[in-house]
Image (cartoon, rainbow, N blue to C red; front, side, top):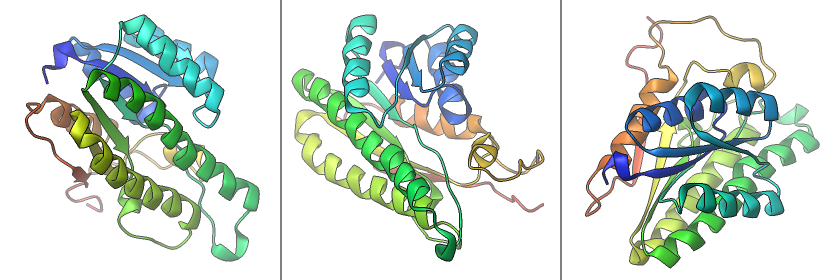
Length: 235
């Protein structure tokens, strides 16, 4: 599709990949609405980017329904969902905290499903739409301390395949993006020590570039899944 004709809803748009994706879509002439849980951070991002914003907890069904309803009103409908909201929790199996484990699944899996479901209703009605779920290289391979996060991203990858099979007949493209390590606030937000900037490791702009490339492909075709890795991250 033409990016200038895109009307884009981005969850988790206050910072990181969501913020940079909103920036690039807006610069390409698209209408953009970002959502997030933290009101002050969200409004700051909205003002900087010049895009719409709505406070929303994607794990809350009522909040998600209101998000989609208001997105339709503000943009006179929309045709792209970037299902990006999520966070990490990393610990050994022996030390897994049940509350934190369930919290990860509630946002990264249930939240993604709720947003996907409500947006799909709008897309099916219009017989057109694009859904891009932001997973991770953790959706491809497990690793030590990754029990909760890996489980959530494996689940998101599986849901993506299910939605794709259901929605293709309605002219809805469902795609998955798997970023490897990206230099954002993700590490610090997961409770770990922030990492120093490393020139050889990707930044959010590389992921956003991929997302826009997938959306901009002619509607007759789509890329089902894209994985993005730093070329030489240990240099």
